[in-house]
Amino acid sequence: MTLVRHQTTQLPRLVGLAAVLGIVAVALTTSPVLAAKGTHGGGGGGSSVPTGNDVSYPQCGGSLPTSPAFGIVGVNGGLANDLNPCLGISSSYPSYSQSELYWAVASSVGSATQPRASLYVNTADPGNVYKGNLIADWPKSGSSVTYGACTTITAGGSTMGQNSPACAYQYGYNKAAQDAQWLTSAADSINQQPAPSSVSASPATYPWWLDVETGNTWQSGTSGQAMNVADLQGMIAALQAAGVTAIGAYSTTSQWDQITGGTTSTSGSLYGLSDWIPGAKTLSAAEANCTLASFTSGAVELTQWAGRSIDSDYACP
Image (cartoon, rainbow, N blue to C red; front, side, top):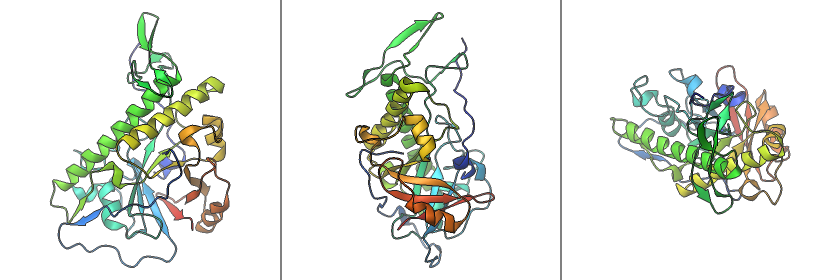
């Protein structure tokens, strides 16, 4: 068998929008992430309607909105295990002014319920083999109080981590820990340049959202859903270990239920999360979607409506 990085279908709207979870529902408010280095002509007074924008790798190098109420930036490049090349500074985007993280921090004006900058991460549970190929980053060890030890099996002459909730938990933990490290590295790369404003390198400074969509690779059936739940819980645990307290989920009821089997009071850290709901095509429809039932039994915090190249988001009252 050939070791490969798992491949997935690109995300429906969050990739067009250019998506995280917590032990309890938390208000997505946080201390400001913008610290002045010098003079900075930030956005003006903004609109009375609390709208922002979300961007990720599809918008790299393009023109971004000016003075949104808030900005939400994708950490990944469409998969759970790759990096958005313009999150911070890279060889393709060498200037702080090309960084989407810097855009969110420096251009947004903030709102009553949302900070200037938030983050979202792609999620997936590929299992130990995808289309006949071993998953190179599927864990072979690790343990948690809830699921116990991730152990190995041997099949076809190859040793791999089991397809188990324990290994799925560790996979999710590893991916979110990597995301937190990527955020720190991106902020550090910006702050090493003479940018007018500095950017917080602490993951705990930002709200984080888990993008949970069927467009990525997930396990199926009752046992597969148990693995998927463990995977998402592992992501929560890693973000919390990095100090993050504001965590929520981007999904729809149908996608969430297909992936997790639905959320009840016995769902551990998935229960009561704040929701960010896509699907609207206009601002008025996005406002109306604030009244939709929560797929996590938490609060509907944000709704999204589709744009031609950049999606927009409404902060629910």
